[in-house]
Length: 181
Image (cartoon, rainbow, N blue to C red; front, top):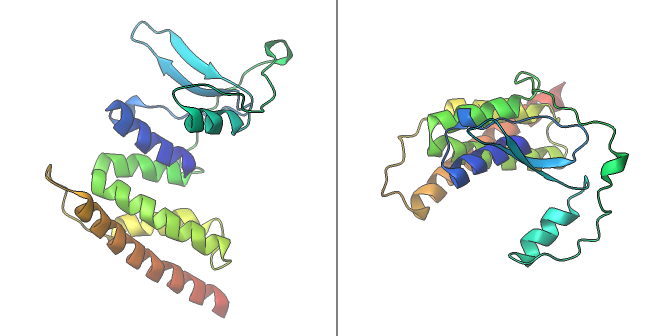
């Protein structure tokens, strides 16, 4: 789901439709972001595969500070792999794309449902594999009118509240069913 949420963020930050943003599995975790220009060239941000650098950057922006990460040694890199994600296997990424296509209210529902589902997993109420199913069911079950251009934070919080309430019910139903098995 993290990649799905990053997809949604990128769509909003760069004002792009979801079909203009590709998610790539990069097992080495060396390339953290990449932009393709209209001429076909790419610009990539490379770094050590840990979160210290982006956290340090966020905390010190616009300055740069020593993150404590090991410097990336380009001579030790043997190759970079890129794999297209299987949207059946990575169901939450598929759901994020669907939510972006459906509109802002769906992305709010997906985020809220995911937070409830992840909390339920961490509390031992559901299995890890239930998260995507619960997220999908919440997206399918909540019928909301599109947000209009005058929507404000209260409108967003109302959608979030509805989604959390419904997802709590979905989790409870699944948890009660699993306790009986």
